[in-house]
Image (cartoon, rainbow over all chains, first blue to last red; front, side):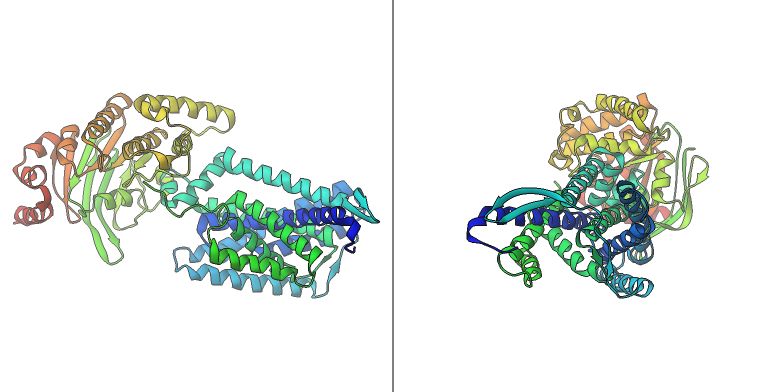
Length: 309
Length: 260
């Protein structure tokens, strides 16, 4: 794809489509960071690895269900991925973070970095260091606009990614604001002792938050596997840091913030790559992280720390 | 006897906050626990809820030893608390705060039946606190101090507890509001039959309301009797009803005198 004088609108439209797709994935991963931060105030640096494990489960799943019709295979892979990563998310919290709760603030953070390194190496040893290819599953697409020989296209896969992301985000919003569990979770975010004094099982609520975040990351992992068609044990790092940037940009702890932040990071990256340089696209995302941390640490949707009367 | 606290010792780090406290609450009564700031009243409530762990001693609720149970289990066995500082969830709406209170209900029902039942209970509790009805959609953090206190008590009432623990419900409130809160506590006790353990610095009001009272000084119970007895007691009068700001020191002197 090259940038030509006469195809300004089509080219712009293409970057927009790519950016929204990328942003959906970042948003899904960012939700895990922000939810965990919201409830226990720590950055789960191993969250990117959970996403990577989701992607590996997708590779294994698609190989396993090779003979199954596409829609069914996709569904089975999604279920398998959410189950496996949900289990990893739960275990991660149980073995690495819960014993350190009540310890000094840095301890779980260091444990998270340790778990991240452990999971990367574990997958490398178990699955090998080579890049795993996945043949394209959902092909074809729609042409949005043709200008001077440049066609802005949206693939069916991109539509699929966007729809699934919207569906999950709507479901999550409903869970947080419309169910008893969501209410308990928000109560724990605000005052764990009081939540316990009303009969909430705080430990279980925290565990379920990790599981929810892991499930969203798993779906992101499956979608990315389909989108890029390649997976390796190191993809969790970059995606994790970018999603973390998205969460910070949106306001860490804020759920709409993670969604919007993810979308913005996806768009920034796509436009940067489209108009400036593909090699430097990661720099764009991380510059955002630095700028936000310096000038507006609470992010777009961040709320002031305390407002108790 | 619905609650029996036997010789409890609790610590905050190395500081001994409760030194062998024993206390009994009879079903259907209001029991007041009075004493100066730092006497250990709130610590006692938190120990009995399992937020602070007792080093020694036992808490018997309804014939069962609950000393080592996790907080949420203690609460779910029929105890509710409106704690020190009210601890309203500031970002939840008043309605959501109340719904949180219904969680520990002993006859939990899931789905639509549970929701309907909770709504019914909420109606009942809102009768006690009509002010809250206008505020249902507002966030908890936007309420005034008095309204927050009402919400804290209402929230505790929604689990239909057998024992209600109230920690300084009158603290920081205007006199009129204080009177209103105390009237409501009496109403809760009389018409709902809820047993109340009331921690107060406002000793006069608390003792007038209470069937029985306990006086705590630096982590120990130094006196107990019926509300009327304690109101008439000279030491109590000197320390808590007229003594004003010097109460702690006087309390300590008294304690030594009582022992001698």
